[in-house]
Image (cartoon, rainbow, N blue to C red; front, top):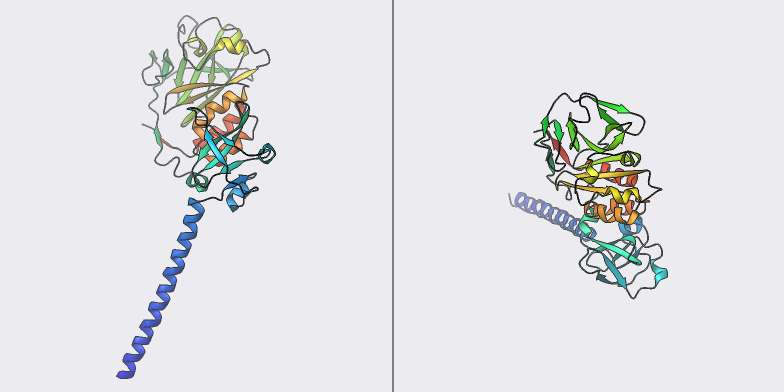
Length: 315
């Protein structure tokens, strides 16, 4: 009996030791995971791979300052040659992603370590289930797609030519006076000008949290009535567009959540400023966009990717 008790005690001790060893290893693993998310080495990074491996190209302690009230940062007391191919900086507290030249200097935008390692973007787009309450019909107010001026579920759109231009065959120009948008089968059509003496609509090419439209500037030249570009929306100005002779097409971004419209042109700097609030929580996507030409087609690719992070449901 004594032998059995001794054997039982020894076996219990072995089990406890094994369990304790397992818990220690688990704690070590959690500590390593926590370190990878909560800290990145100070210095200058010239590639995404370096950031992921926590291996800066240049180990320094950068002094980072904020530019006025904008969410843009500059770095002080660092030789320009070290910033030549910079992708990101880290001061030990946050990661600063390069956005290229801004106001004549290298500009950066602040990002958290958590967002960087959150490659599946669950945090940035958590619980973002969108419900679009769009009502089919014709609209005078571009920022209200729930109360149409004319409710109509049988709109007859016809595609005209290769430039994504549509016309309404069951409405004449008189009936479309002052109409600047339409909704049909959960798609949005914007009036951007005229085409062969008919009201020209363009259909969304993307939909979700962010709708994207593209229109040739030729329809603006022929415009004689009301369009989305002359309705007083502050971000859309056709006069400025017509003053750019080499501009053949423009992109239009509609943010469903904020109910805002933005104009995307061949001005890379302006496009960047429009896109930054959208992509700042997706640092690796931000770097992808910064390293592109930042033209409307580049914006479209980024918006298409971000839309996949948002769920949607019908009302």
